[in-house]
Length: 95
Image (cartoon, rainbow, N blue to C red; front, side):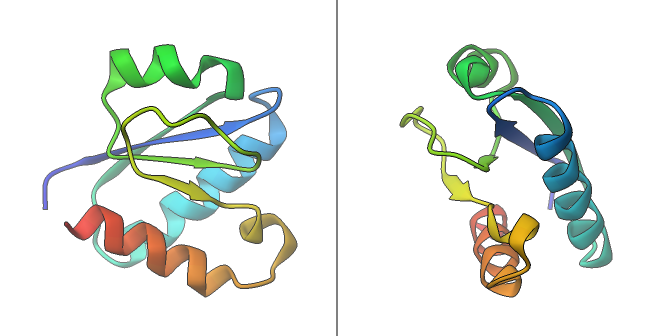
């Protein structure tokens, strides 16, 4: 599997997206997935997708359809259904 690029967005592009990004990166590295995780604000998603061409967009809030698979990753903050989100992310990146 080649290196996967994941864009993680939250309202301000600050602590929340960084928290989610760290958890996703840690989980994927345990599974042997080479990944680069980049954080941004939700309002930057469209422009970042055009530039970075990520394999996945994960977010704490709804993001617009940008032609890239999207995952709502709020569970990584709440601790509820975490494995479901990790499985969804892994499944998307495995295609």
